[in-house]
Length: 166
Image (cartoon, rainbow, N blue to C red; front, side, top):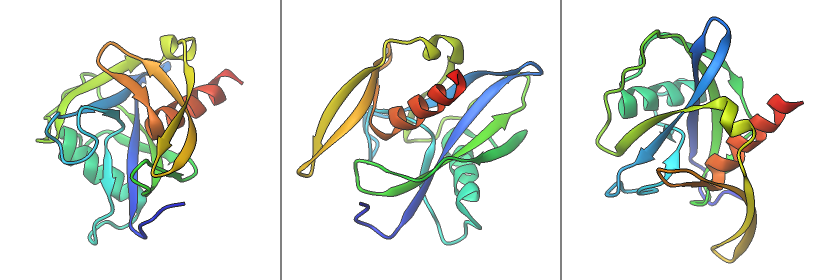
């Protein structure tokens, strides 16, 4: 259960061509970032009073963290999740129609990663149990070159990839 009444949104950004999505975007947070330092994540953050709705929060965070403001098509949302900080978040899916990806990294972002989808479908995902604030949580984990992918980000990505396999 979330501890805070505040809400957050993350952007699950799919990039591809006319034949469909080919890559998914993750960011690696900077090692001095105030939250989730060094971790792989979807771009995102807390709702601000000026945000119209959760997709607007995800769009604002894409602009702040990566400079992405154009060529976004909102596809829909996944059900809410609760991150390790016990914050309720909504994954908002977007298709990014730009011929040449370009990023303007925000101060909290170390790097942007456009990962190919096909290898992720057959990747060697592991299951692990995480202990956090006295709770045992089952989670997926994938070892990537940049850092391990785990927690809420891995949960959302793995759930979506499993839907693609059906």
